[in-house]
Length: 148
Image (cartoon, rainbow, N blue to C red; front, side, top):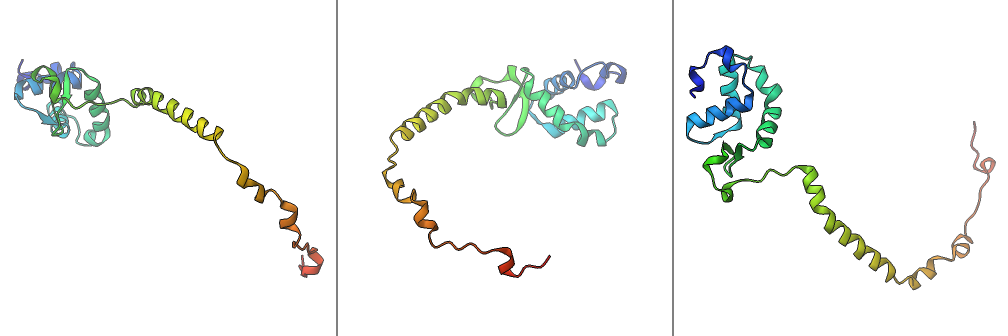
């Protein structure tokens, strides 16, 4: 399907991801996010301010669509053209947190062991607070000469 020969009315019925699919399919090469989105804006006749307002959402939509892959050079292409060893994995923060749970549990266990092995015999020299306070002098406000 030639995306450039489609009437504007038909293009408007497609999602940005579908237009991106056809753009990449017709280009035969990978394209960066900005160039793809600028081409969509041009095809749909949208105002240029749309780029600044929607580029983040567009990038997110590409990264969540399994038809596209982000290549190491920062360009997008169709997944069907590449083997899996060339794909940059886009990790969702929630997945990252789930993967990190096991190491955190291990750290917590190690900290608990360290606390159990903590030697508090050196703390006895700091427990004698009465001796530390014996030279403390309390002065009444009147003695300081403070006026209200």
